[in-house]
Image (cartoon, rainbow, N blue to C red):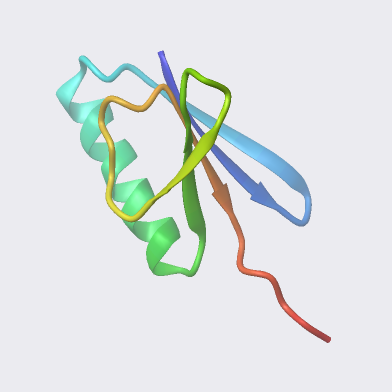
Length: 73
């Protein structure tokens, strides 16, 4: 089961989906495009414990974290 984690001011929201399910995969890709289009940064956690920024949807990613853009005051 793959997970998309959206970080925001209230904490985080987790969206799990089965990457083998074409409908669920399409929803996950649409969520990715919606969030990155709204200014979120996406990062995938790799097996070596490091994170890698991504600019396009990775259907093989087990966990994608979305961070909102920093705002100055």
